[in-house]
Image (cartoon, rainbow, N blue to C red; front, side, top):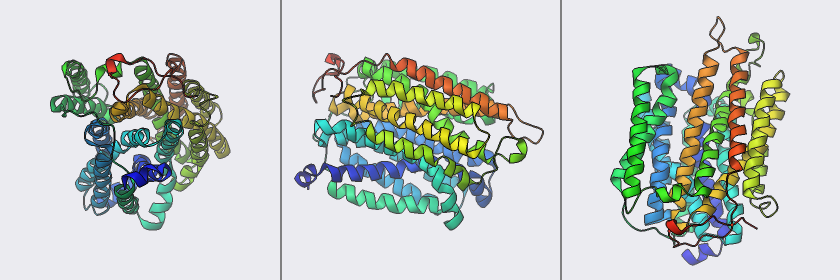
Length: 477
């Protein structure tokens, strides 16, 4: 099996692409139908939001940790575990009789977040070096498109089959992908070895929960509430302790020497800023279009209609994401990152200025997708190139997490701005959305500025090169 698979990287890519898509859809597939789930399971609005929060926390913890385990014990083996978790979580969610069971199911699903770094690592192990940038860019595009495609698909699926099919369909697909991965994906030739530093892993999980939980729930608990302030303080303490422990560990979960490489920390800073604009647009643009027309600015669109207005974004995102690798010899990943961030910033400004008609939203979302696709793919490629092969899973997983943290920050900021400006009926004012989009455009402008600091790549990294001896890698092409 191994030799056969290694002679057919396209087949391996197809399986990895399907795996990435099966998880990325779960990022946004549930968001538009939370009110439906709330009514059907007889719960409250504050409780049903834990369907999102539980998934976020689980994925944030699992992504870097299982990425590191994949580097150590084998990426294929860990990929199969992640796929099994997604399938099991979807099965439990599809049959969930109560909101509590559904929340547990979402925690199980979140373990599948490790698919992203594992996919990048397997590509680097199995593909010829000249094809790695294109393959990484394509997987990144699939991840980004999948995250937005859920908004488009949710309405039609719920309308035709009911909300439980939002889990039945991914479960069936993931089970089939798991079988294909078992047959066609080879095991990793590059392994980091060693054992898991469980104390470091617990600290990593602790500060992620302490940081992401208040960011997700502050709009309910209140930004000045003791629990929010206390959790943020705890996050600061745990982060400091985690960095100290990881620096002193001979076998860290996340190598701090790797994280401080110029080619890693600069891209991660861009990812933090970029994530703030990306995820907030996914969350709030549909809400904007669904606002009743009686407010003077909304379109009163249905869940399906608001999803269709985001379709141009997904199309352009896919195009530029898949082109990122092939055009790298002519337009470096660093330049792609700066260009994409600038286009996203321009799109944020256009959302503010032109939103009087659905076609204006559709055109601007298409422009947003152009910038998002190329920058998202470039970020992943830059991280993969900056570290040795046996650190790809951990580095990619942490980069995904940084983007997720940025998304949580951006969503929290946007939510605070929008909900602070409401009319007598409780609906958001137009100025709430426009002010929010200005802030998100500012995040993208900052990302474009920081991308200038990303070092150019000069040479390829060898598998066994010690992190302490790393130099800045060379640009593709």
